[in-house]
Length: 183
Image 1: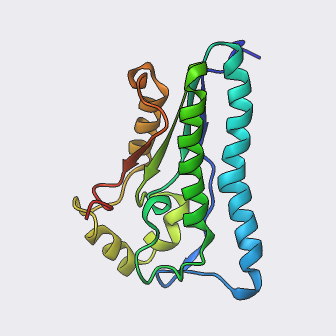
Image 2: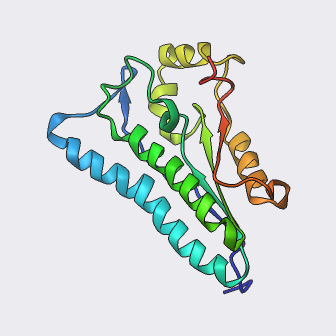
Image 3: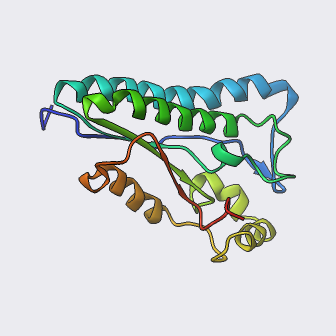
């Protein structure tokens, strides 16, 4: 309404299960509710935002969409952190695939779609992990620089993907994880 067009959309909302003792807390009684809520927020929320952003961007000749996925959508949790039934990896893997499909199919309309796959970053989503000194030390030890990411580092990558500097990048994920998955 203010600018008459939409040039950039950044899907930055997401949820994950809480962790307790370094492992995702998931009860059998609530597993389907967890699954539905996780997919509603992480994947469907991203899809809805993309759907409406594409509609607006087509009207004005293009734009950039930046989705927030996760390294956990590419590789899953480390052994011992999940039992494989945690819906977070699957929901974020879906965001990666949504990004690839949109990136390929909307490029002809001048719409670039990419996603960020951050590693463990100091945010509210990782608070239950980083508040535990033993878990924090464990996580830091598996990162080559020996630390977790800062939110500003992820924000700068999002800014890059939204900018004209990334004009030849679409349908891909930018991994920002201090080499975590390269190990």
